[in-house]
Image (cartoon, rainbow, N blue to C red; front, side, top):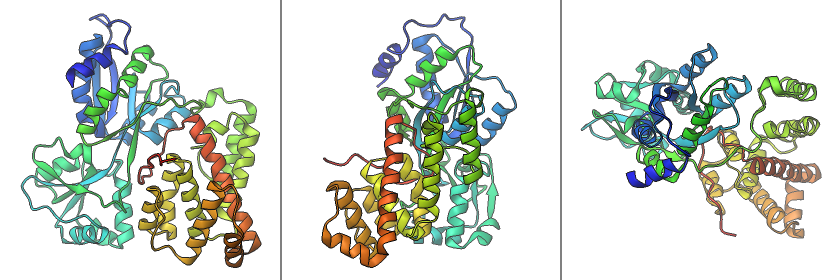
Length: 435
């Protein structure tokens, strides 16, 4: 593998950098630490470009960047990368997703492994544990807190939780019985081992992106390093360290730095923030190239997502079906957890992700499933299916169902064309389906 890795790196650089070249500073999340410790020396050997690596959790690194710390390349959770691009701290041109990681549970090496294969078993293991740990500002923190809340055991767990800098190391040192963190942060720790990943119904994947500092004087070298991290040879190392490598793609319509926005774009951004109470993200980043279209699309979404005749459970069900039809990972990720919280069964959602007709659907879901499938595949709806939908949802419900399909098809088209990196709210991976 080292031979292939060396060849891949050499293909990225037209000539090696001189031995006296200035070191390139890489600020990286802890999740990619093990992979970078193996990959960095290979990159240095092939290119002559020395790397200075610094590791911390993504939130801390973002704060350091915002305070003006000097660096050349940042590897953080994808949403933080995009936020720093919007602030003008990172350059959009070489931005890329390089990996994603699932969360797991660490135990002390040699300890009995608890059964955490299902949500019910995980809950029992949590209640039985004498102590647990996770990083309070880490990528896994929100996941763990969400699980506690879902199980209704927040008070019990808070009483025996220890917030640490490194969850797996805390377990190895005997400071906690269970540690929650990215799987890639558990595998390298000698005194700890992986009890298992979170159950599929609870698993949340975190996507990590890389970008060059906007004021770096080594932007070309930084771009080469990011490109190297997306090579097949680098992917083998990344996956060996417990992460999933992200295929190399280029965000064709990346976030626009705030200083480069036109007056119309600034107005569209402010209207978006006022209407949604949030920053511009996802499909609205590429749509911002046409600010009036973005504003009108956002307004349509405000109705279809929040005010349509379908209740949230059913509208989110339809959105998942549309994301699946277009194999649109960002759209799926953005709505997967929302759908589960609204009442869509994890088993139903998993079947949709895999392209199977779900078992155990409610009567309403059955009607919508057939309606949406016919609409997407047959480009029309049969009389029998239309009659069932009309009886169940009325004319407004039928029209709003068509609207949700059409609106999220538009967003999927935008995202697929722009190659917008997927978010990291977590969900099953949408694999391409047979034609």
